[in-house]
Length: 128
Image (cartoon, rainbow, N blue to C red; front, side, top):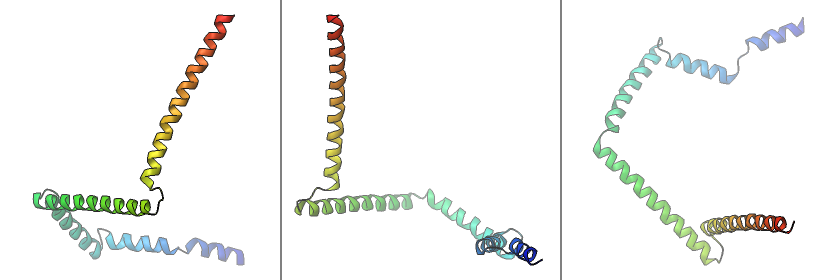
């Protein structure tokens, strides 16, 4: 009998995550007062963002901020690379350049191997 009680308790016991999701569902559901308020706020916010998304002033400002952010990131990266170079260490860009050069060299070696294999195969046929 004792084993059946624990099984029954396990079936009715809910995890904190399940309880939280259930509470969120109730609070944002269309039947509750909070759900109605949530939907009203969501509609109003969506309308405001819709107008903002086509506003030329906002788009110009957002573009300017993004441009400035990219420039700042590039300047910071250059600064870090200069610091690494001053310590006589290779920077990430140096390693990437070497990796690209090595890949090109390996491609050339593979092409030469193929040509050599083709030439030796032809030379072997000519002897036979």
